[in-house]
Image 1 (cartoon, rainbow, N blue to C red):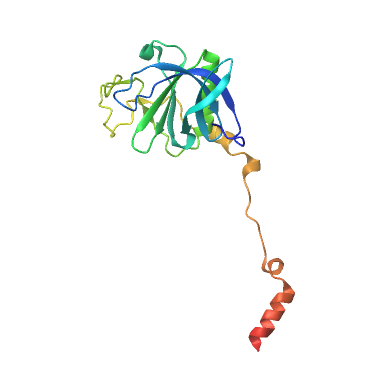
Image 2 (cartoon, rainbow, N blue to C red):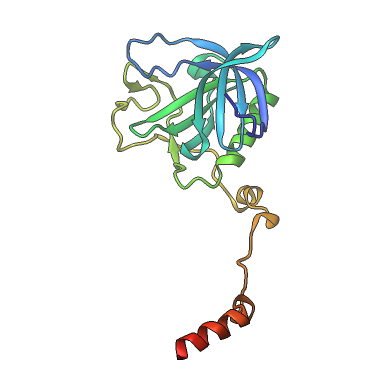
Length: 197
């Protein structure tokens, strides 16, 4: 669950596709309550009336390698976007369907702003879905790690993206100290006299 000290940047009720981490898990779409913090995208059980309940999953934003829209033809669903992240052993794709274009664009913009500084961002992604171990967009095997994608990403960090991350007030200049201000003169003289004896 989002900790009390975690700042909530955005939240809404959207639909998530099962990630099929096991080949025996059925593919389905479930409504989830999504919460975005500066560090994570968290999703919960819940509904619009009761809000969020039990945490179901969390993606650390530092592990995100791509944030892209999904074409309508992939799932026959509108307003879907994908969050691709590295789960130590493999790339995982989280598919999320927003309720409308405005919500989709809002989530894409905020997520991209937060991951713009990631050194792990990829220049390619898979525009299709992986079914039975094969990417439908390029017919490559899912286990082929030589190719993290077959289509160029539609968004890359720019100076403007990065400017949103590092604000001038966040830059801390190193403290300057001089020998004269950092040495207590009376202690120095005492220690110096002892050393001379």
